[in-house]
Image (cartoon, rainbow, N blue to C red; front, side, top):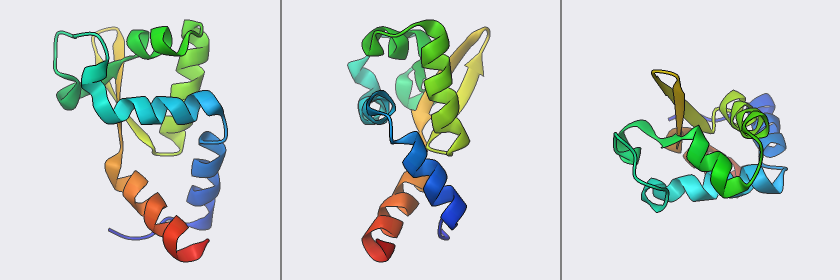
Length: 104
């Protein structure tokens, strides 16, 4: 599985340093807690519009939040037509947990 570099750890901590981004990552643990979509959340993730609605932020702010989480490799984006869907990157999150447990 490998380990996260120091730069990757810093990027992840910065991404999680905002309460809404931290909450979003928690919400994505259960994609089915969002409104139904054409394709299952387990398959493609949660549509940005649903994340935006739950976070009660503008579309541009939601996009910025998700871009930050994506740059830190904490979420994976799947484009379907004009819509972006996001799901957690469980592999990176597991590495982050391991790094916290062993290095910090």
